[in-house]
Length: 221
Image (tube, rainbow, N blue to C red):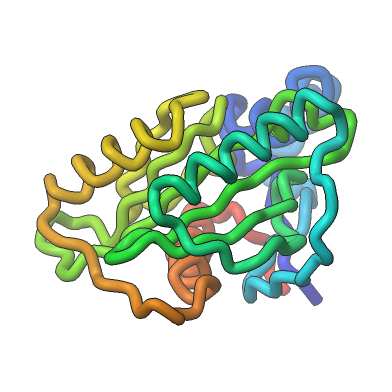
C-alpha cells in the first residue's frame, strides 16, 4: 500500500499551497477538529520510488500560451548546453506531473515541469528546476535546488536541501543564480555525460520522505 500524507499535520500555508485556497478553506473546519482529537486525515499518496513513464513527443501544452512557454524554456535550456533526456509523466504529490528531463554538465540536472490539467493553470505553469548534489556536507546541506516556480513547495522540503525560488526567472539567469548558490557550499558532484537522470531526483525524494516522516506527515503503511 502506498503511503499518504496526513493533511492534519500540515501547516495551514502548506495545505493551501497543496490543495489550493478554495479547497483549503473547505477542509479547515474538519482539520481543526482532527488536530484537537489527535485524528489523522488521509491526503494524497506519496511516491516513494520515482518511476518516470516515457511519453511520445508531441506538441505539449494545454493552451497556446502554455505551449509557447514550454517551447521557449526548452530552447533556452538547449542554448545553455542542456542535453535532453526525454519527456516523462512523473506521478507525485503535486499535479505538476509532466517533466522534460535534461543533463547540464558538469554538475547540474534539470527538469522542465508543467501540468496540462485545467484546474492547475496557476501551479502548473511551466517552470524549471535545477538540482546539484554537493561533494561534501560540511555546510549542513546535501544538495541545492533552484526553481523558477511561482509558489513554494508543499509540504516544505527537507532542511538538508538548500532551496531557492526565483519565480518566472529566465533560464540563463536561473542557471547563473543556481551556480552562485552552489558555490556558497563548495563544489557540486560531477555528472556523467550518460548519467541516470532519475538518480539525483530519487535521492532528493528520499531526503524529503525522511524529513516528512520525522514531522509525522506520513501515515503508516
